[in-house]
Structure formats: C-alpha cells, structure tokens
Amino acid sequence: MGELGIGLNPRAKMSGKLLEDEKLRNTVHIAIGANYDNDAPALNHFDCLILDPTVEVDGERIMEKGKFLIF
Image (cartoon, rainbow, N blue to C red; front, side, top):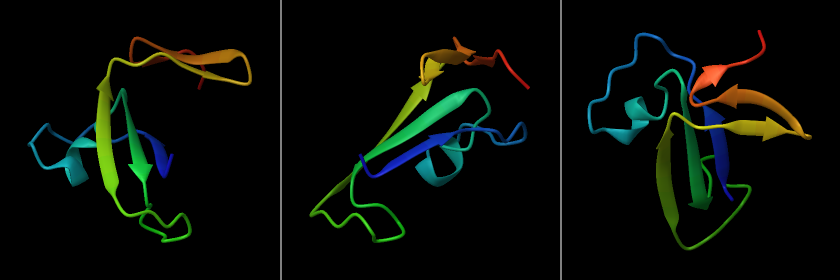
C-alpha cells in the first residue's frame, strides 16, 4: 500500500477529480503502488476512494460507516 488517508475536509465536494474527492469528510482514500513522497517506488499508482468506511486501528474501532467514534 502506498497511501492511506482519512478524509477530514467538510467543505470538499465530490467532483470526479480524485485529488479533491479523497479529502471528502467521512471517506477513506487508499492507494496501491508508488506514493507521492516517492519513498515507496512502484511502476503504478492506483487510487481508491471508500465511502462510508469502517476503520479499526490496533483493534479499536475509530470510524463506523463513515462516522468518527472518537474525537
């Protein structure tokens, strides 16, 4: 995996341009392959946007169906 990001921007709008879409609040963005810092070189870069994700970190659920459970 090259990138993992949790969208936090409440003003971002779904535009079809992934650079903005990946910042949508209550989403998760993952990328397989090279990342933008170029410290994980690969031949390809595939971006994915997950709507209404459930996220666990070290066995603790921090997001369920796109809503934060902590903070």
